[in-house]
Image (cartoon, rainbow, N blue to C red; front, side):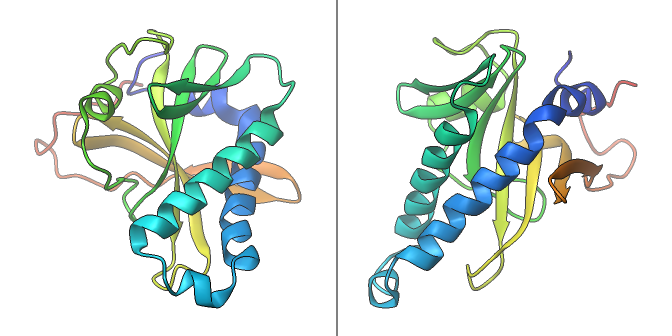
Length: 186
């Protein structure tokens, strides 16, 4: 599987899309519904995102407990989901193009450049399982799987779940020919 091969990556993710989608929604909803309004009013944007992230990780742990080939890893503070040593995904709040806005640590840069990291399967494609909240942070507008490469996103897919059946659609922003270093291989 190559980093730029969206079809192969999403096909490998297919059996895991519904559990990831559900866990992300449950983690987000837990923050919205279980925290009193007066407490939420005191939270900075960073605190909100951090709390939602923590709840999503707890939901992922529960959703993938006992699933063969799936493991949540903690790599020096970077929490990722390893799926069959083929795909490793982190969980982030993203914008409408699938980009996260976290501080670019050395480890985050290495992850985004698809470089080896100690404790992460070297051959695994690194992806971002992202949630895009609405402007009021009152609902998730969509769940995406984005493939980072440096400061770019070669591809991005929106995940939809209807009646417990997951599907995806390519939402990679169109680029003008010659304006990107990413070349999709078919």
